[in-house]
Structure formats: structure tokens, C-alpha cells
Image 1: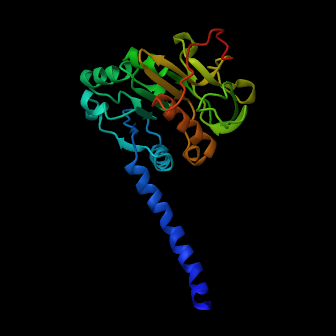
Image 2 (image 1 turned 60 degrees about the horizontal axis):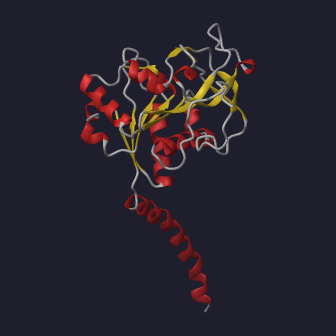
Image 3 (image 1 turned 90 degrees about the vertical axis):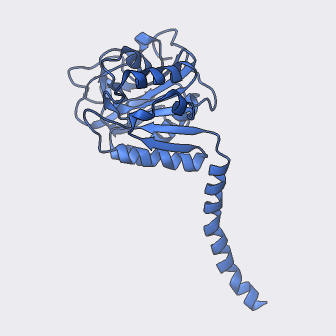
Length: 265
């Protein structure tokens, strides 16, 4: 009996080490959700992009969805995009979709029911493509130095806001936008408190920083956060991104009709 008892701890440790492997394999085998992470840049390139890809891949393993990452815009075809429930534009800049055919395929994908997640510099993309500007909700204008600011989380029931503090103070690069996204009928999910930091000469006053909206039959969600590498090891920020992916992929409610009162309430 003493020999059998002495072997039990080693057996328990061995089984414990195997359980994560079995869980991961099972998650992939049962997967019915696929997400494309697109991070091509033709302008400024964020050094946090690899961190963002790795963090979203980690979410995929944890929450049982498949993540494909690419910078190959030739994959934006009707046939390929049909494989995905959501496409993440991760700090894309400039004109990442290089041909009219690619742009037309992506527009069809969204308008026929696909999901779009824009992270940070997705708003620094597609300046010559008005449809894309409406999809994101607003174009980038400027930003002050990186600093702490307070984010007012306005809709705690939205998946991307669940578990976030109502007043969320964090360090990031805070975008000012060329227009207020409320003008295109988005549902504002969070705003920046401009009294909590120095927004510079392009201060917006009413300053949305995360929002969502319908684009015909499609779903779009955007966050202006995510400039820094540290963002992608921040559990709260990654919960925010995960919720955006789930919302746009059709996994749960999409409470994103336009703000009736234009105050994000």
C-alpha cells in the first residue's frame, strides 16, 4: 500500500500536465467560429502588432475559436471571406486593401452579414475609400503624447464592456478623430474624459473612444485603444477586444442601434 500511495502524487502531476493539451485539441476539433486578423500597413507601423496577434490567438485557444493572421490582402475574395465570422483590422494604416476587387469583396462580405472589428489605427486606414470610413465610424486626426486617461464605460451590458470599471483609467495613445462618429449613427460604448488628460489642440469635447453599429446586414465594432504593447497583456483590454469579436461574429447580442439622444446614454 505504501508503494501505491507514493506513486499517486506523480500520477496526479502527469495527468494535470496532460489536461491542458486535451482541452486545446478538443477546442480546435469543436470549433465553428473563425476569425481573420489583418494587420497590413502602408503607413506608420505599430510595434505592438505582433503582441496583438499573439494575444488574439491566445483568446482563440481559450474561447475555442480559430484565428488566422495575415498581411496578404489578396485573401480578400468572396470565397475566402465566407470562411470567417469576423475580420479584425489590427492597427492597419494607409491603404491596406490595394485593389478595387479586394475592396468590393470586403464590402460585400460586411453588407451580407459579416463582422468587422477595428482596433486603434484601423481608423488610420482607407482615407480614399468613403465606405470604409463609414464602416470604422471616424478617421484619425491627431494624438497627444501617450498618457493616462479615464475612459467612461457607458453600456455595461455590451459584451465588450462586461466586467470593465465604469471609470477605467489606463495608459494609451489617445486618438482625436476628424469627426464625431455619432454623426454616422453609431452606438457609443465608451468615451474619453478629456478633463483627465491633455488631449491637445484637437480636443473633441464629446470624445467617443469605442463604438459599434450596423452596416446593412453586417456588424462593426471599433476601439481607439491598443497602441501600446502593454495593452495586449492587460486582461481588461483583452476582455474588451474579445467582447468586440464575439459581438461582431454573431455570438450573443449586438445592442448597437444608433444613440437616440446623441449623448451615449
